[in-house]
Image (cartoon, rainbow, N blue to C red; front, side):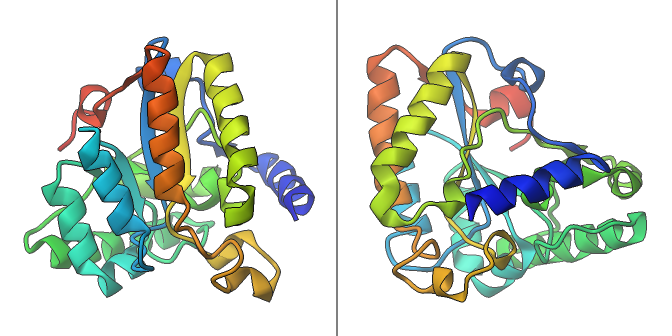
Length: 242
């Protein structure tokens, strides 16, 4: 499955830009890590809620790139994320890549509405992480019209394709990449969207739809890298947004 996904991404790259960038582009120095989480909020027990507990335990603030349709269904989780000082980034409303400026604009409007309803006040984000991390040239117009910038990532190990039983393999790959880059903007998925997989069985609790291993993975990564002298940077330092 990972092989097919990689082929798909390579084909798409010919017609678009990507949010995969160097950590310096995102304002990070060596031995700094910024944690980011995509596709939530996820109401599955022990997932987004447990992840928030881990972050609170170690006094770490992270970036949550939320999907609008999920925010509309689980506003209590959105409110908690915001109240606990994490940064919320637009990850589209439907998690479907839009190929036109108009389609992108519609996604932004719907996402802003979902966020505002969840937090009880007019709200938006100056940042956008596109579905699958791809920005088609035609959609950049839609982002620019709202003054929105794309939010990049420097370490992406396709964690969304890993089931719970492969947590240790995933952890090793993440550690290798972060150490090679001396830190970076790491993306993990506490939620899951159908865009990534072609197999129906992947969306049962026994396959990749079960993201409940992510909180424990994050805690293990935090302990490992803090022991090595790395700093988990507050996103407000590099993003300048509450």
